[in-house]
Each structure stands twice: as structure tokens, then as C-alpha cells.
Image 1 (cartoon, rainbow, N blue to C red):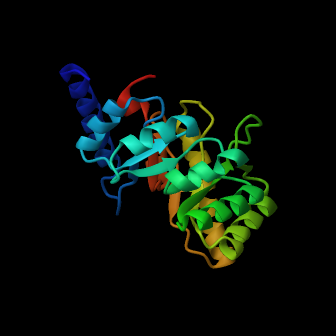
Image 2 (cartoon, rainbow, N blue to C red):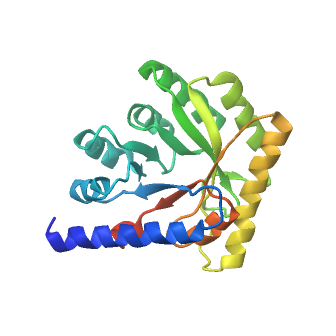
Length: 232
């Protein structure tokens, strides 16, 4: 990577961190920044790592299993892609977080793999808040399925640490619409905690295009790629 490319990455990251700081003025905390590094080079990830970022997100297992062993052990890896049954062992092996769990069978199988590796993994349940038929996640209207998965994770999967909920919004560019959708996820988390006596503390929501609305509603994890690395 040449000097100009490195400087551009540094500039992008500084601008993003400034924006997050501005959006969190008056709030008690700021969200964790997960740098979405799918389809990015090892050199680009190393540049961002050198600026103090320790959390990176990947969506493709075949790509991740090549890159992760070549990068620092101090990186915390978040899996944010679609979950397939045959990928769960690799997720258990390489990742510390899974943001996109949405199926009881997947939860039980991931539990077995985590037991095999003698490790625990932090998980969020993916919720389809905008009811998009082509999008992954449990429909937010399907409360029975949501609560069933929560109970299975807590009661039968000791190696899965349920931390909260995750969503990917429908692309709209409409700030007010984004607020409404993110508030639905926040309300669902609060309802789960109240009904089941849990202490879920994470809302993984907000990407480059809708981060402002997510932070306004109370996002604790933002997943940002293009605002750091540029368009792929």
C-alpha cells in the first residue's frame, strides 16, 4: 500500500471517529466501532489496526479463514454475514462475535462446535425489522420464534453468550424512517429483558448510511465499512 492510500484511510477513519463523537455529545456512551473489512486487503486492515481499531467484521468464511491467521491476535473478529449450517464450525473457530444468529438449529450446532474448541462466543440475534422477504433475520412480528430462540440460547447453549439484537435496515436514505425502524429493535430488546428477566445490553445497528439514526436511538455497535475503506 502506498503512502497516499494509507493517508486516505487514516483521513477517512478520523472523519468517521469525529462524526461518532459529534453524534454522541450529551450521551452517556458511544458505540463500539466494528470496521467492516470484507473484500479488503490485509494491508488495508493493518493500516486501520495501526490507528487503534481492534474490532473488525467479516461476512465471507472462505475469505476470513485466509486473512485472520495472517493478522494480529489482538483483533476481535465479528462475523456479520449470512449463517449457513456448514459454516458454523469455522465461525466457532475464528470469531469472537456472531451478529446474525436467527435459527434454533444453528444455535444448537454452534454450541457443539464452541464446546469442541473450548471457547465461548458472543451472539446477537438478527431481526428483520422492515419485514423484507429477501433479507435474513427473524421477522420482528414473529415474537414466538424470537422468544423461542432467546430461551434456547440461554437454557441450552452455555457456550453462546447472548448479548443483544442486530438488524440491517432497508435502504431508504430517510432519517425519520430509519429512526422508526431502529426504535422497534430497541423496544424489542427492552421487552425481552422485561419479560424474561434478562440483561441484554447490545444493539448492533447502524452502518455507513444510517449510523446517525442508529446512534440517536441508542446503538451500542456500529458496523462501518465504506466510510472507512471507501467503496468496494
